[in-house]
Picture 1 (tube, helix red, strand yellow):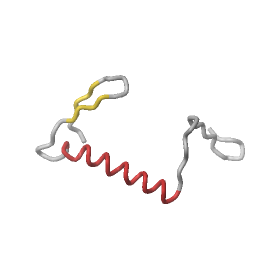
Picture 2 (cartoon, one colour; picture 1 turned 180 degrees about the vertical axis):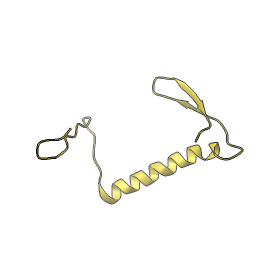
Picture 3 (tube, helix red, strand yellow; picture 1 turned 120 degrees about the horizontal axis):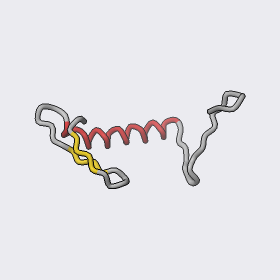
Length: 65
């Protein structure tokens, strides 16, 4: 959705902050490293299973990385 001037309309939760530039880049790199660390052991011929629990409490077992 965008305005007629082509500007996007952003709807954010109250209290949400936006980051840009180097700070956003650092946050994304840190998030990628955390995810990589979590899934690293699922990869390769001796990959292990991981149990994921979502916000509703549903459980999924995966070894797909």
